[in-house]
Length: 287
Image (cartoon, rainbow, N blue to C red; front, side, top):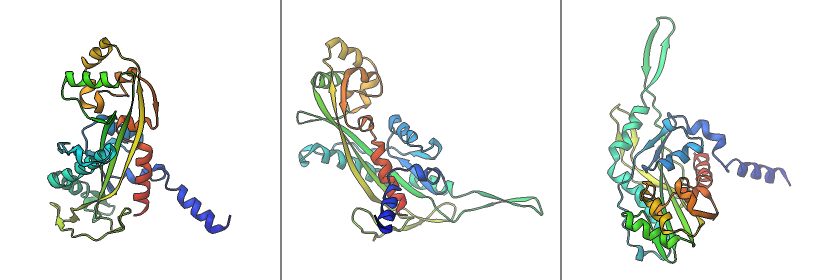
């Protein structure tokens, strides 16, 4: 192997995880990590990846998740479209929230004059790069797309359907970044944009437009044990099924319903952290 091949191999190896750049991503003055979800599980998974809670902002999407499923040839395409729409919803309807922390983060570094003992605040001229992470999870069984149950009867219907069968869990992720970086879009190579530069409350400018920088879909197979009517009713009497696709949570009481899985565990939880880490490493590495 020649030196060029060695260098190429080493460069590729640096993009497998975010471990080498965690110190950068956890610097609130450099990066603004936004999760477009109220899901405590997804926030927990970002923490597991090494992202500190104090640098993760929660700005949940209000997208109704009501796309016409008939417009998509595959459940995975529907799932991805929903994840992308969640991001668009946050960007279009929550500009104030998106801007607010950027202005707050960009205020203070303290400089002390050792001669006079006077302390002054210096405003940084660098705006952090915002990374907006959007995700959607669905279940497919026998051609049916299962999302969150509407009520107890619906949850019981879903679990009866899944009992003693294997289904597929899809999680789609869309990653948006603002244009504080002027690098290319890795997906389409297009960095042109008609961004409007806005001025924040602190007098500093930042560009409000976000671009979709990366998206991907991960899937895993889950096999349920045979569930009795009492098993199902007892589970549905808890609060666990009602905010989860398919009406169960693998990380909680619902783990007792499952006999085996094939694929990525975290995809089933709602955020495939291995693939997300790879994508973030590539995006940040491109800056």
